[in-house]
Length: 134
Image 1: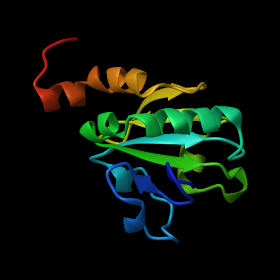
Image 2: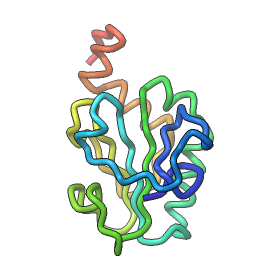
Image 3: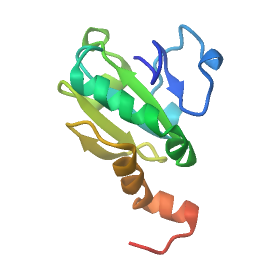
Image 4: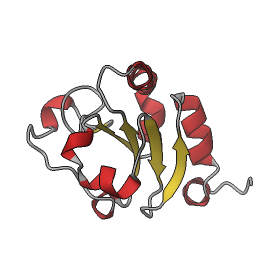
């Protein structure tokens, strides 16, 4: 499991120094209330993974507004709880809603704008913002 900027789990809203070096990989139950975006790859040098991380790092304030926590997993051999539960195949991005359910899966890098638009259309986000738009 790798964070958005270094080798740890990292909430976009937390400074890197605030993250414990040997943090255990969380379960989906432990992440309820936030919107985890889990980025999987078989190797940290995967071009899709590198591109995805650059996209996420470009607009952290948009992710922060939506309570997004970015998690990465580039070690299939470790077979952590998120990898076992979400069963990725190669590169993949999985968005988990605040209730812990899988809201969206993408096999290709996704811009923050696309993620934000998808999040903003979910019932939980519409309820948070008071939006009546479908």
